[in-house]
Image (cartoon, rainbow, N blue to C red; front, side, top):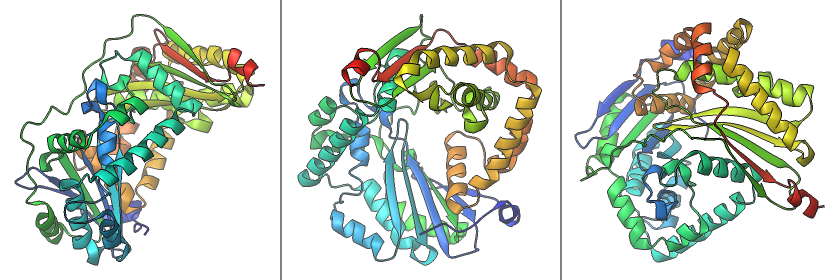
Length: 436
């Protein structure tokens, strides 16, 4: 079921988002848009992979995969049937820092969907049969990912960039060894320790008013407990790498090589976040209009695609540049990436590039708000990072406020080319010869 339209003009007429907090700590945000009778549901639980012990990588992902596999009140079939018979949906997605959930429903069915959601979050059954089914699916996911050159290069780059006990060092989806070792008791203990009302944010956007909507939320969620001894929702800082490190992962039979260049990044709440975002857009975040794409693909024909990303969350995730290339062009691709990073670091964007980046970023933002789900996603991020209920209104002025001097300063501070981590995965060198 698609979300209702809520474009820029509609947003201007709509009531401002509202925020409420239940006595148990559950935070609820509402965005009213009564153009059609649907509601988009977005939310998160602060229960991502950053909490996984080093020996249990993938534990949080495993728990998340059990949320739609039956509760103490419903079997997995009954859970799915309760949503399907009213044409509603719910999905759960694990991530490095949070477990997110999303869904859509007719406004007249919101009570029922919230009840199913609350049941799933509070009372997963972890039946032995469903645990083993989920384990098999998670193992397949890991195996498939480990055959993907892009995933392997990114994973290895993070392993080099972060110390072994840092949560970003480990793959959030886990490994075959760690997933095989997880027991039902581990899953239940993890859920009990991390899933609580005070670790959860819920956003409802669409044909819902804060008054009646909050009543519906209370009926389903007010009995959910607070966490007894919650771990701090934080990511430890990582020491800057002392030297450049490079690693090649030969993968025979692959038609391309993936190159991942990584340097230390920033957190989402860093004061330099917006200036760094603009500078990164010019470098490679702008896809077809970026320096990397222009020089590596359009002018030199070295890559199939290349982009850079600032992975800014609660913690300072890496700034990564990813490129897919023919094995014969791998070395030239690496050299050109380093050339472009050094150029951006030393001189930053031009005035024309800054104007184009600001124009694009402010122009595309309203497009993200054309659905209730898009609005809900922005409000969810704003709540998570403490950006304020007026973040959507302020965003264009924030981006327009990034000066050329600020973008250049961010380039000098956060886009230093060395030291870096560089991973190459695929049919490179001996692997290329062996794959012919």
